[in-house]
Image 1 (cartoon, rainbow, N blue to C red):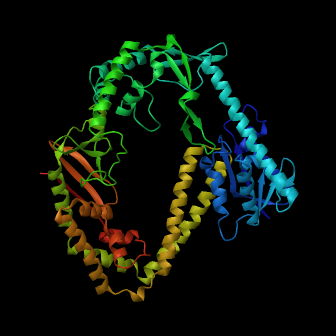
Image 2: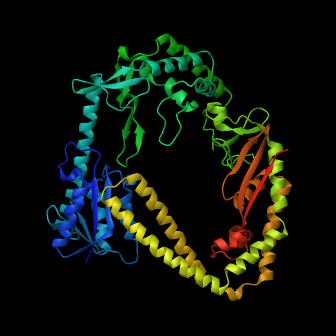
Image 3: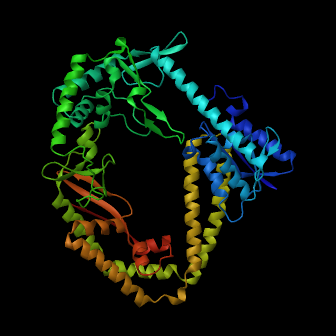
Length: 549
């Protein structure tokens, strides 16, 4: 029989035995157990989740991959080997027992190598033992959570650091615990934020000024450039630690792995005057102004009252265009409604030098006119001719043969990636690559199936031209009418990526790409056909560019 393996290591390690702290050791022992029973382990079905709680099911991505594999008409393995039931789940007893039960109902035997037992159900004793085992595993997780919370509470009340690093402070080890020490350079930046806020500046103006002055910034999120943003300024202004008040236990981790806020009565507040960066007078001055602004906005109906944003923009290019300098969003700003770079507006010229603001009407008119001109009869003829050439029986057969060879290569690459993940490689990049490969595989299978479903004998060129012309005329009408809702929908249908706006003096050059082929052929009835590169080279993909007057 073919065996699969699943291993998991929790984020909490203090009370776990040595084996539970290593997914590699669990996999090694599971392989030995399978071999002793005469089962062959399929490397493509060796799964592990490292450093994740057994209750955080939304984060157990490889466990989910295992469950997805069981959705096939015939499961790809007949045995699942685990260290024990707690490795698969630490959810509440009924939930964890139900998960294992559903796997067994698919015809897969579940074996626990630590005790040399097999998961069973369906009798009174088996159901009671299975449920109680799952409930004890869940209770262990709950106890660990309580132990951790109590330990963190003791640290917080003693003035020790219960969490990570906070901007404005350095973490320093002292007599076996960690304490905070004020970082003078970062503290100066914090005092400046409070002073600017008290003087009447808003979050955006403060962020722009600090970036222009190249003031030291909080650590950015992974993949982002270090810079002040309005949201960063707001976080600084509302962090009570800067006035010497440590507030801990505000949030809690729910059983599903998400976080929520506790009631204020559960918060732990500890005064630590030695950590004060701003005085009470400065804090009150800044917050008096913030409270006043909030009241003004509330009176104007700009906050509270269940106000919701519109589901779509009233402006043609909002959300569809990006800055050619920094890659950020192009938004609508100012009293007179101009397009401009959001990063420049909110973070300043040191973050993005694109300061060009262009009236909506000028840019909208230029983009729509350029597209309207490009979508002529030649484009329509090229699309249809390219599709017919790609649908020729000989071409289809060649494409299918090439795609099947590519599919075999992808399957081998996916198997190697799964093995590397199971062996404890660099998890994040491996998972990202695996996800990309799996997406490519799904698209390739859909292409092969679609090609096989095409009946070339029923395709009439004249009828196809008429249907494509009808859809193309609808787009041209939408672009020429200048009705924002219709034009935005037409752009969504056509654009294969964002419209890139690059400053050129006091105006913008724009460039984009529209994938006409798939959309038009779908309207023409070829809904199962996926365009090949040959069709794209004959006009299915159209690049356009221009400049606003």
